[in-house]
Image 1 (spheres, rainbow, N blue to C red):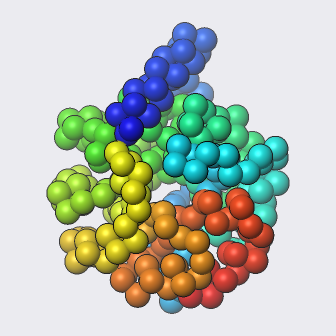
Image 2: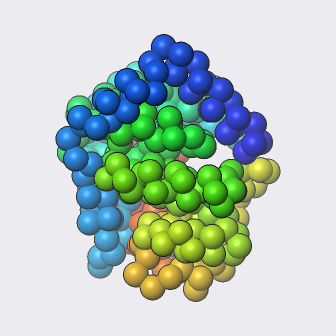
Length: 256
């Protein structure tokens, strides 16, 4: 499934590239105001921090929420105390787009993550051109050369890579990059099975000084507390926010 999602995301980016060549996107990326400091926004504190996600659907759950106005939802997240906002821009399975990211960028002052299946420099440049401050890199989808190339480009453009892992070997690869923001996804993107305890099993492998992000399997404040007790500095939450009251849920999560 991960290979298919990545291949489709790259194919869709090639279609966009025909309409908007690399040079044009690069020029747009370079004239953007500097990216916001996501590491500062997400730095460890006395309470857990939340990356709140705008997510219409998923391959595992199907349709979740219509979200006709992603900017309005983003403003709710900001009002509710989120430290950053994740915008899913994959269109086939998640119903997102770069237009969503641009709308959110215009609406809030928080760092914004482009969450997609990133595998090419063009997609990274698209992210900056649309106003992203962070870009997701999924270790399982990339070989070491690709991972290093994309990581370095994200840094060069002034953004922050969120390097996502799902095993000890992948976390070690993220650490070898020098990544300062590393996530552990409880959902295996090959099988879509969930393992809420995976973060805790891998927590000791995070390098000192790394911001530790727990992703997926957050339905309640108890789940947030579970991750916090295991050492998470940040949780990334989508489904629980888009299917419920985002401000009330954020309030409960942030009280952990």
